[in-house]
Image (cartoon, rainbow, N blue to C red; front, side):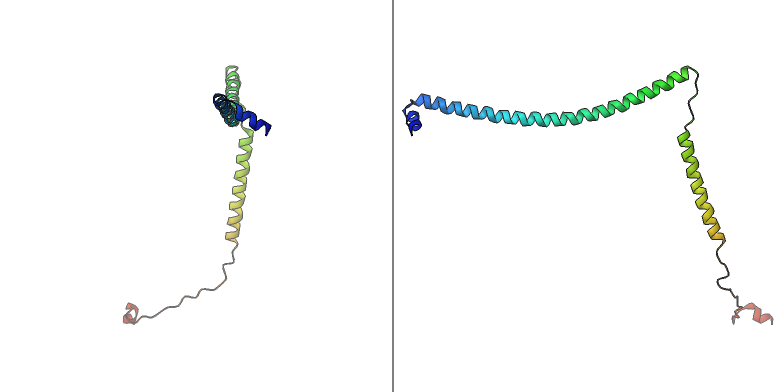
Length: 134
């Protein structure tokens, strides 16, 4: 009650200034919250973009390092090493395909062909030329 009486006793310009001040404080706080949310969102987005860029730059740096090493070896007269992993992998795949083809060929060759005896029968037709010769 006491505070209400004091607020009522102020002059109109003081009340308007107080109301404007409260409105300004509220707007600044709201803007601060919005800026904070925007900054947080921008930070999350920039972290994701930085990670993606780091991955791209890391792979590009690795490729550059690999090419530089190969160029240095070529200038030094060294031959590149054989890709043993690729050769061993191709050999294993070839062996697996050969084994599968051999197994299929053996299975096809060992089928029991005497399942049913086929009997051929001569059919005499009434208009056949064989009858006229007899």
